[in-house]
Length: 582
Image (cartoon, rainbow, N blue to C red; front, side, top):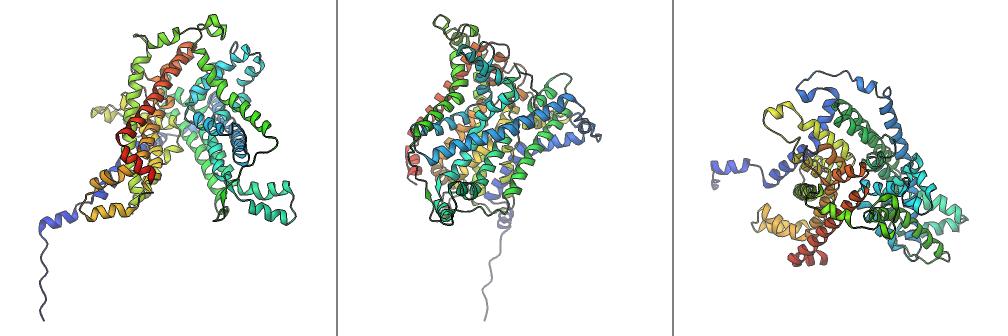
């Protein structure tokens, strides 16, 4: 019995078999992009710790003297202790405020309760330096607090406890959102079981309800700590009137003040990242193996009754909203209409001159608007492209490099923007790059790439939620019909996640416009940007100009976001309706 000969494989077919697949090419591209945007700057910072003159082409191993001198330099020692004190105090108070508001919101029904959600999201998206500038105007001598007859309250702001309160009111949304997810579910069956065993109401609260919420409270506390210790905006505003050095601001001074000390910036950046890493590691260690999964099919959204003391809850909520939003942001808005800040908000002191000066032809804001919006648009485009492909690979690929993409696209959440900017300086300020004609440092592309790197986690996580909902069978069916990878992504996946892509792009755009830490570190000479211009005007006591510029830029940014959402929904109405129906 003879067998049929198998047809031979042509050389062309063999070559095609050896070529990488489309998924492999995409994986390689995303990995290279994340290496360039995220990993390389952080590696460059670590290299400068070991080789202090690495940027000059000198690969002599350092003696790590700066680490030994860390506690001998008084300014550095103060900055570290101040940052730890401020972040720890903010962590405690911010978690109490956020968890307390979440408890009120999800356990009781009362008028104005919905405003808590609005306030949390509003404060979360506002740049911290703008909120801090409002607090400075509210609290300083002759400010809004003095004009309202509560000058004693203003005097308390420019102290360590005062800064803790201000930062807690700025960062409480992180704790609120983290605890809200756990508090919205009804698990009264456990409480009822405890009561049947003889426990009273207080014992049930302390022994049953609160222990179940420990993971949420701990996550909230770590989020507040990490965001507080790496915040650059608040100290940038407060240090104009209050001498309280913090690590992020000293990092800026080391890198930008003559004589420049890249080594000092790298050491302090390493200390800051180490503190953040220690906090996250502590959280993981505490939560590991606790067995805190207590939801099952019987869980349901909590039924919120209206208690007899609801007027007290409403009053407390209104007072809190006044303190958290109106005190800083209402002050900034009112100052923008004042002719002279020292005269207060009186009829004869009202003027539109600040807005006229900001919008005049010779104003410094107009070129800054063009530059900052250009940076934000390009950073959003880069982060959306990388984020889209990374989200696809995380959801559908089995490649071994998937774990690297997951880590690299998340790590900048734990790396403060000021540290990432230092990494970009140390990476791109290399003599051999200058010899090759590569001039990223000292150009707008340093800000664009760094802003994109810091925003990639936002883009990836927002789009990953939408991509993960798309059945893999949709793409597999298209592949069986002969559709290539790019065709499947363009014709199937992108329409299904259009809403998520738009949300990610607009979030990155808005955050990049007001990123003070990155722009102040990487801004090229003669290249004004919005946050630096506003911050400089605020430092020179041009409060009317600075607040008017803030109102204008925030209004323009909000209009761009609203117009883009409207235009995209109108243009791609069918895609959005399909996404919402799904």
